[in-house]
Amino acid sequence: MIKKAIKVTFLMFVVFFTSNLFSQQTKPYNDKINAVEQINKAIEQANKENKYVLCQVGGNWCPWCLIFAELATTNKEIKDIIDKNFVYIHVNYSKENKNPEAMRLLRNPARFGFPVFVILDNEGNYLHTQNSSYLEEGKGYDVKKVVDFLSKWTKKSLNTLK
Image 1 (cartoon, rainbow, N blue to C red):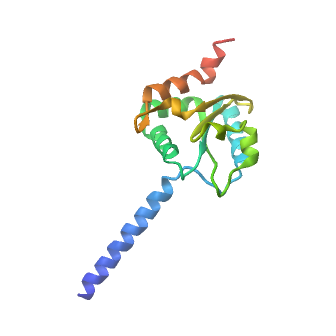
Image 2 (image 1 turned 135 degrees about the horizontal axis):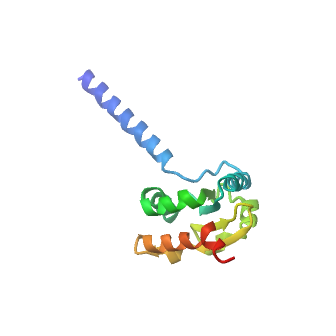
Image 3 (image 1 turned 120 degrees about the horizontal axis):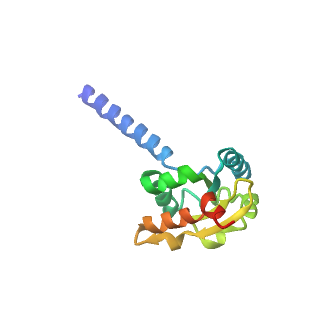
């Protein structure tokens, strides 16, 4: 009986530990970091890598934010476009940390709802704000619409206009 209780306790510990570990890994937003510093580091990286910055503004409290964050890392076509063309960051906006300086820097994107996407060039200049509702389809995102949006805001795509 004692051995069974130990096994059950051990299994409960393993389940709790792994589920807690998994839930921490699936939360893309960090409300503890300074978002202005995060954006500046992303701009610096984008400059070195000749990419743009894709800011996904939202929070772990937002189901649509989490759905997009997962799609961006699991859909090969979308992931490839992001990896090749953008430094992709998650800028937190939550009741714990609204990051007001970052929101001003990004031209108040919260007015569009969440998530909202802001694209900056590799020097930190504002290029575009995208309301995510235009990318939705049913209970998720339309891959074709997301690919179309991302493809139209790459450095290569914009530089063909010059």
